[in-house]
Image 1: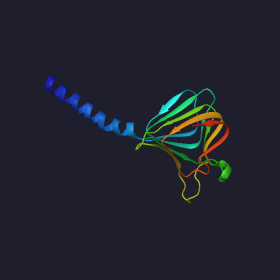
Image 2: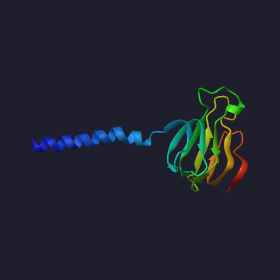
Image 3: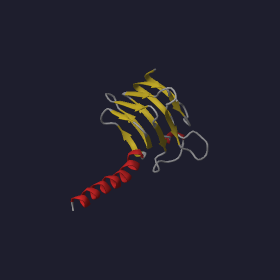
Image 4: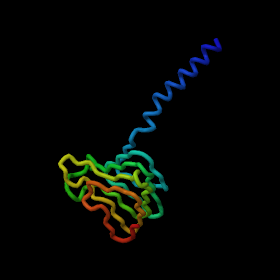
Length: 146
């Protein structure tokens, strides 16, 4: 009986690994996200609508991560409804040479798929970042980018 239980435990551990490993590598999807605490992101993430980093908060994105901004399906179509990253706090991209962070949009028609990173009284430190398919990669209203 003890031998059977040992094998049953091993089978359970293997089965749990088969189920959990794909979940750990799955992309995370969120809609119109406003940070409510400091955060560090690793891996792939899809944002439907805007990503807002309020004053007093920091978002750090680790090397090799891919962030895709898509238009909120409930929004009207038009250039003013393109999703954006609005930085009022601090935004930090920690890409590495050969392992950058990619931020892009998804568009079927080949046009700009997202507005870009908007610095509005915030600041950003962008190291080894690829910004793709944006109307304007970085727009500074007030603040700074390094």
